[in-house]
Image 1 (cartoon, rainbow, N blue to C red):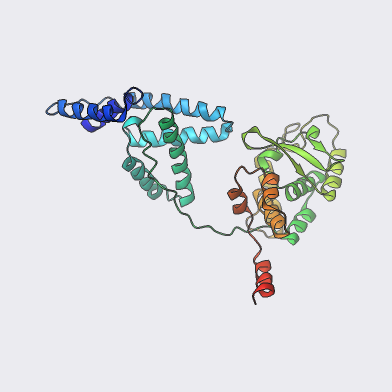
Image 2 (tube, rainbow, N blue to C red; image 1 turned 60 degrees about the vertical axis):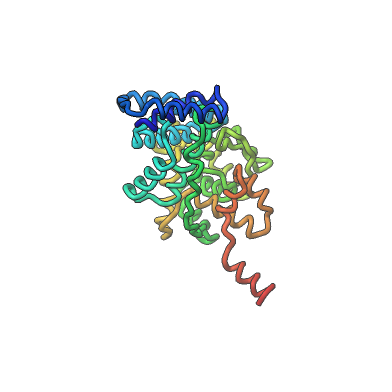
Length: 328
């Protein structure tokens, strides 16, 4: 407890003293506290004290353009960690974070990818505290990226997409399949689409991506035709592009699109059918046919090209053909 108290005082004086002065202060505190007892504050007070810093961090990320969904995930994750550790964040050390991550993985049996996501959030939070001079040094700095096994995720085949088209029961469902397969947009972007966002003449539409960033995506001639046929069946004046059949007059939600794709997948015998698989299929097909990776990155709206490379798995059949051509 004495060590935590000393570290807390040193952290508080960080903006006012240089490194040599901080070291002298630490030595003085340690000397004066010999033989003395420090009473620990209540856990509830600690949590209230931590909460202020968490809210400041969330506010700064909001200004940077993070989505509300991401901010909620960050806040829940950080508060869960601080609650489990049960210490003022200025006294948290690297071992506290390592112990938490180890226990969390064992208790919840989560993947290494999930653990690394938690690590990244903690690293961002404590780095921000360090940059803002709230702490001397981030305790997450020495916790390195968790290496996870990269598995090759499957994509839809051309035959599977055609079978899904054949299984569609309405012009709306067919237009959804075509929009997903030809644009590669996120399902969260699709549900926000308005009629006014779509340019049928140029075969393009403007989507609102992560961080409220707009970008233009493109669709093929078949999608244009099926989208026109769907809109011709509409008798309403609502601006939402895709409407729910269950909730009259309401935009189609993410759950509705996921249910549709899963249903179509079940009908044609695909075990894992979900909207995001169309996005991966488009990225893989585009790179496989020679589209520059930078253009695929822009098309998908990825901030980092590493993310695009994770989506785009080169088809093994083409690797084999190239091996025979250039090597074998």
